[in-house]
Structure formats: structure tokens, C-alpha cells
Amino acid sequence: MNHYEYVSKSKYMPVKKELIKIINQVQNELRKQFTFDYKFIGSSSRNMITYDPKTNQGYDFDINIEVKNANTNVNYNAKELKKILMNTFNKVLRLNYSYFPCQDSTRVFTIKVYEDNHYLNTLCLRSPKIKYSCDFAIVNKINNHQQEYIRFNKNTQTYSWQMQGKGYLLSKKEKYIKKNKLTNELRKVYLDKKNLNTNPNKKSRVLYAEAINEIYNKNK
Image 1 (cartoon, helix red, strand yellow):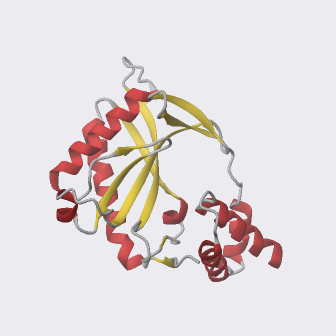
Image 2: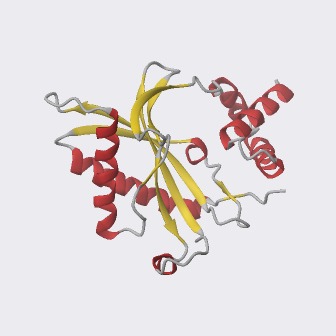
């Protein structure tokens, strides 16, 4: 059994504000090349951030970055966009922040703060404990229900735009739950599902969709 619990708003809000400050600085750095919008998604957008204190993973944020107005004289490809953003984030992070440099992965790039950065710098072999982290996905909206994202293929070391699925289309059910004051029940069911989940490939967004459908079908 897992041991997930909710992160209090008083704990995560200062981190969220710092992330916004970092993003704003990146926006200023890149303004002559292109502008971008950002949006907190997932658990951080609905005050349902969780973490398991029994692990070394900490808690995390998810943010979508959507490039809007690029320099009309330059046509950036997927690799260029991701590298520019990662390099600029690294530049800003070096100024006065405790985040480690960006780590690239298939769908996102990630910045992390460790519990003991000094310990980490000693290059000890024991896995360091992550205090909190943030995943950034670079996306482009196709319509109201679809978007594409920059995908990094680790095997071929290539970057490309890939279509993302339509998701679970839960907005109608979420509105029903909020309107009928069932949010606390949703929080309990979602946390129970996270703690009882034994499938490592079953992500939080799937468990959240299951919780939404369970509450909606039970009360509708």
C-alpha cells in the first residue's frame, strides 16, 4: 500500500509563486525571439497535489508552455524550441534559485529541488530525496479538445511534434461535482485510489478520471 497524502496549500503555494516568477523571467529573456503562454495543469490546477513521504520523490507541478508569437523571420523546429526553452530556463535558474538544471525526457523537461543540495553535490551514490519538482510540456493547441506536443525520441535523439490524445473530457462531470458540493468526497476517493494502486503504469490522471466517474455515476 502507498502512503499518499495531500500537500497543504500553505506549503506548495510559495513554490508555485516562485515557479511563476521563474517563468516570467524566462518570458522576458525570450521576448525578442518569441512569446509564450503557460498553464498549470493536473493536480496543481485543482488544489489536489499529493506526495508519499515514504518515498524520495517529493511533490510536483505540471505546466504546459504554448509558444504564441515567434519572430516572423525564423521558423523554429521542435528541437530548436525545446533547446531554446531549456537553455533559457537554465540561465535563469543559475541566477538565484536552488533548482538543478533542466532534465530532458520524452514528453517534458523537468527542474528539481533536492532536500540536501550540498549532499547531492558530493556525488554520493545513495539516491537523493527530491523536495519538489516541475514538469514542463511544450504544446500547441489544435482545437478545444486536441493538442500536439514536442516529443523527444531517446533512441534516435530526435524531436518532433506528436498528436496528444483527447483526454477524458471530464469538465461536465467536474462542474456537477463542484456544484453539488462533492469535492471533499472526490478528494477522499482520489487519495484512496492512489494509495491502493499497485500498477506503476497507472498514472495519476487515470486515477483522477476514475474517481470523477465514480462520484458522478454514484450521485447523478
